[in-house]
Length: 476
Ligand SMILES: NC(=O)C1=CN([C@@H]2O[C@H](COP(=O)(O)OP(=O)(O)OC[C@H]3O[C@@H](n4cnc5c(N)ncnc54)[C@H](OP(=O)(O)O)[C@@H]3O)[C@@H](O)[C@H]2O)[C@@H](O)CC1
Ligand SMILES: Nc1ncnc2c1ncn2[C@@H]1O[C@H](COP(=O)(O)OP(=O)(O)OP(=O)(O)O)[C@@H](O)[C@H]1O
Image (tube, rainbow, N blue to C red; front, side, top):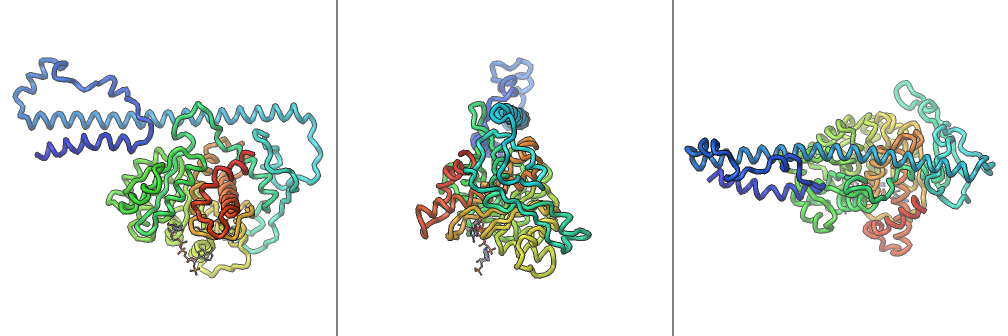
């Protein structure tokens, strides 16, 4: 009876696990080379061997073999997918390099001698001094002269044994300079849309969040990732949040596992297939969920996956900074409240709220130079060494969920930036470039949505604007 139950389970589970895989699962070589033996094709010897076995024993034997075959199938399929991903990524790098070379050739043809510039280019930016190969037209209409501001006026200690001057190399003061300097770098990282790619290559993003109270936040983050250009967006949420999130959109792959007893193992299975992770939108603050999120962060770090931590994920970091401290592919996206909490947890003193830039740098340094995005009237992006500020015009509308749009899109930009060759970002920290892309995009969406809906603007309206905002900022 038990065996029969087991058989039903196995066979009913099989199509489900293939569907959940959501990556093209072709017939593996194993299934091709070892087709299931039918009674007629089996050698006589085995007929004899099995002749004296009870039906139950036979069934058991059969199940053992089929389970073994299934395990082998998935193992081989996993290997094949990994090899294919690697090959595609190499192909993508080669394509980018070729595009850049072509850009350089065209630039040489068009401008044999460098044109004199009305305003001197940033002199303190070794990365930006080298001209970005014009693989795409430069951003903006050229009416804004680049205005790079040195940020070396602080003389207070920045951390144990460090002076601010030692850690602050430069600061782009935005609207103009960072737009002109960083957007071209971001453009270099955006994968070209070609017919040579398969589903998944432009990004498989995972969102860790979604619980009984909060289903909107993970949805906003996940759908934003898709709209920015990821191919697949997975949400790992609690069991009761899953049907709700699924019902918002058929585009998302939703895993109701975050509160299951083996949540970490269930999610870890997916990590080899994910390109970046966004932890926190709608996660809630239940101990068990935070504990699972912590373990997933630890395991993702081992795989070098870019990790964006937002919302309740930052609550976890404030409690246990070591979970992400020093991880160079980690990006924190606090609002001012979350920032204050983090700062005070790290520095054990009240935040001096008169100088946000300085406090942000101090926190980034204390966190081991990971990238911090302090959201607000102007977004401050720093890894403790470099600072970008984004004051792209948004609007006065502050509906909930805008931060989720930001963190979801950042998941995609971070994957693109980290998987591009280093010269795509001209040596600039890929996290900074990615964060600048996400803040600019969020604010532009806000601006466009507000233009249409004014006081009624919601995050869903902003998400509708992602396509045209992306084009305007990065493809025009
Ligand atoms: N539709 C959904 O499902 C959405 C779900 N969401 C999810 O909700 C969860 C909790 O996130 P959270 O941000 O509300 O939590 P928390 O840190 O306790 O802040 C609460 C208090 O902090 C303050 N405050 C906030 N911002 C501030 C600022 N800039 N500057 C100053 N103060 C500021 C403010 O305090 P007040 O104004 O009341 O004094 C506010 O009431 C999280 O999982 C998130 O993802 C959201 O994504 C939205 C859409
Ligand atoms: N005062 C402001 N003026 C202009 N833009 C702002 C202002 N405050 C926040 N933003 C923009 O709104 C976006 C989200 O920031 P916000 O502070 O609302 O995040 P959040 O509180 O984490 O969001 P969520 O509601 O998703 O939790 C950021 O891109 C930020 O630039």
